Structure formats: structure tokens, C-alpha cells
Image 1: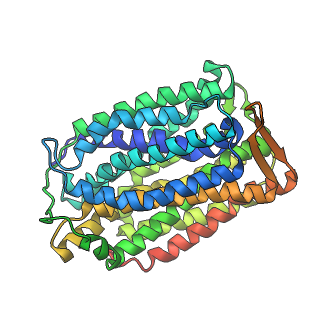
Image 2: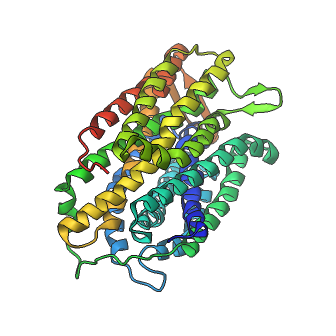
Image 3: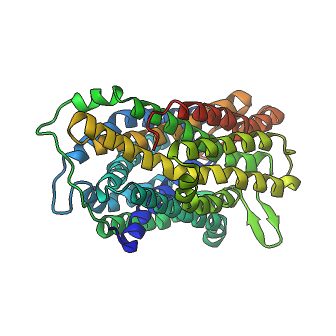
Length: 446
């Protein structure tokens, strides 16, 4: 029986990865790279695409490597313990803008972004796989998964709420602010990851294959539940990715900067913070809701339907700062669905891992969970890349001049605004609809 301390320790792992690094990378990076760092829209889109194609190879390899790790800390925990410092350090360097020309900036951004994806994989794939070896009790897996999501969303709430206030506290240029906050949040990510590795326990021993083989990779594609669940994971992260990536542009070019209500600053980060708070609450409610509707699959379906309906509703809100509270209300409603389905994905991956072990005779837990991380990166990256490309098509351009200064050019502001609005509402609604359709053919009925 797992202790509360262990569940909190497990939650700290995703507080670091999902709540700090991934949240900042998803929400702030597209706008940071084009408007602060000074990359072109094309460079930004290409960077995200290349990094995720890299992940398609490294994530499954990492999963297979983690499955075969043996140390005094266990199979998966050593990757968190030894990877914690590189994880926070590279994240901090990625938010630093060097005083280089366009070529130097490209090299810096591409090199560090690829390094960040590699170290994120080395930490997060084993972290996800831990769920498969901490307990064999299905309800307790749901609890761990729920703690994980609450940890991620609670930290995401803190990061997004505090971001604009910390920027003002740090002062100076945007580049200076991002560099200082990168270092600060990098330290927090290191501490959270290390604490997770030290506070958790591996109670179950994976059934290891005697030697390395490519057979587990082939078995994955013959595993129907895995194929469908991975497609669901890609859709889920497409849905989140479009909204996160375009939020900064929405505030910059539709809200015309921060919206101040009394002394409360609503920037693009604090705007999404309302969603994080809702996800935190409903992530905790998810196991109860799942028990009430009878299965993880049906709970996921209901959550997906909520996301479809509320995303369509958002499209009809007037594009004006005076509608800010209406926008926040719909974001909160959408986040009810996100909060319910987020823990379910990882718990369902544990079911798929159990199914694979029973069918194939050996454990491929790390490999299977790596596909969840890969789906997250792939969905977020492609959506972020599409946001950059589609904004470029609509008339948005960015770059660095000969003096090293960031230059923004907009040829058609109305077209850019309409594209931003659709990327936050219509595109996610379509993706959520596809996700619901896939859930109806998912074969594991737990």
C-alpha cells in the first residue's frame, strides 16, 4: 500500500516536468522565439518540427533502455535522480538570449532545444513508467495518476499566475526577464525531479527480456489498444497545443497586451492559469467521476464532448478585451473536460502495459509509456509548428535585423486576428471530436 508521502513525491515529478518546463515550453516558447529571441516564423516552425521528429526515435529507444536498467535505485528512478540537474540547467539556458546575429541564434536555439528534448525524454519516460511498477492495484494506479495531474496543474497554476508579476519584479528588457525566470524555474524543476526520484518506491519487478531485441517495437504495432490510445494521446496534445501556443499571440494582437482589472494583471499566462486551477480540481475528481460513469473510456468520452462543445462556444465570443470574463468562463468550462481526461490517459497506458505483458510474456512498460511522452511532444510540437506557419500565412512575420534586434511585421491584422481566434477555438474543437471518435473503438473497457 503506497503512502501519501509517496503519492506527493510522484506528483512532484510532473509538477517539475509538466507544471514548469512543459507548461512554459508550450505556452511561452512560440511567442518567445518570434517576439523576444528573434527567430523567424519559419525558423520557429522548423525548430519544433525537427525536435519532434528527433523524439519519434529517441522516446521509444529511451523506453526500451529504461526497461533494461538495473541499479540500487531500481529500474526507472535512477533516470530521475541523475537527470535532475541537466534537466533544469538546459531549460534555463534555453530561455537565455545570446547577443548573436541570426545564424548564431539559430545554432543556439536548435542545439539547446534538441538537448532539452533529449534530457526531457531521459527523465520523463522513466517517470511515466514508474506508474507501472509502484503498484498492481488498478484503483491505486488511478490515484497515483490523479496525484500526478494535480501536481502538474497546481504547479502550472503557480507558474502561470506568478509569471507576469515576476517579470515586473525582475524588470529590464524582455530578454533579461526570460533569462532570469528561466534560471529560477530551472532550479525548481531540478528540485522537484530529484525529490520524485528519492521519495518513490518500485515495488514490482519488470519481467525483463533476456537480451535486447527489436521484437517489442514490432509488438507495439500489433497491439491494437496501444495504437488507438497513442492516437488519442496525439489528439489530446494537439488540442492543448493549439490553445497554449496561440494564447500569447491572442493577448498581444487581440487583447492589445495585458488586461488589468483593478490590481489584477491578466496576461496570456494568467489567462491560462484559470484553466490550470480548474484542471487541478477536476484532475482530483477524475477517479470519482470514472467510478461513477463505470469505466475510464466512458469518462474520457464525456470529457472529450465537453471540450468539443465549449471550444465551439468560444468561437462566438466577441474578439474584444471587454469580453475577457466571458472568455475566462469558457476556458474554465473547457478545463473541466481537460482535468477529467488528463489522468485517464496515463492510467490507460498502464492498462495497455499490463495487456502487453500478459500477451507477450515480457514487460515493455517503459517502451509503452514512452509512446505517451512521444504523443505529448508530437501533438504539442506539430500544433505549435502549425500555429507559427498559419500565422505566417495570415500575414505575420518576425526576424532579427542586422543590429540583432527583433523585428515584427504584420501585413493584414484582421486576417491574423481571425486566424488566432480560430486556432484557439475551431481547430481544437475538430481535434477533440476526432479524439471522441477514437475512444469509441478503444477495446479495453476498464
